[in-house]
Image 1 (cartoon, rainbow, N blue to C red):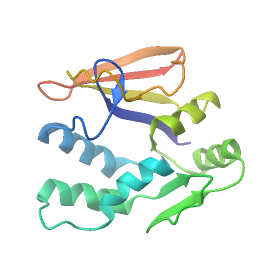
Image 2 (image 1 turned 90 degrees about the vertical axis):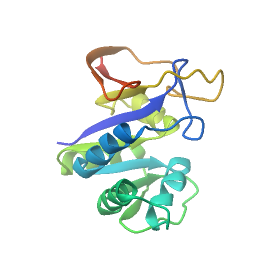
Image 3 (image 1 turned 135 degrees about the vertical axis):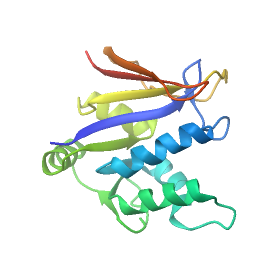
Length: 176
């Protein structure tokens, strides 16, 4: 059975914003390894549209960007949206009852499936479907923005912490 993992970069004050701060080269390589090992990714529409950037090679990419793009393109992706957006290669829309669709996906797969986007994570948290939360904590204070937890924080238990680079800690939690 697959495990759903919600992980994102987060500021010290609890916000996620890929434009305000990003991964160091060391952290980006960590994300490449994660993407290479994932059984797939589940996206909300907004996050999927952001990630579609990786569908097309860019002339200024280095080896790490090409490696991440290759890993991202290779894995299956599922997009949860009421708007029925057009999805790219290796992606499918999740239609019908969200809980039933995600439970079936977890049952038919092995490994980790990434959950991407705070709004989607909120819905899956409310359904009790997320198995692990990974916070990549950066020494940045944003003061406002999109919170990591789109609703009240669920009861969690810390299961691990790792220093990923000189400034980022990965905190791993499971539902309590």
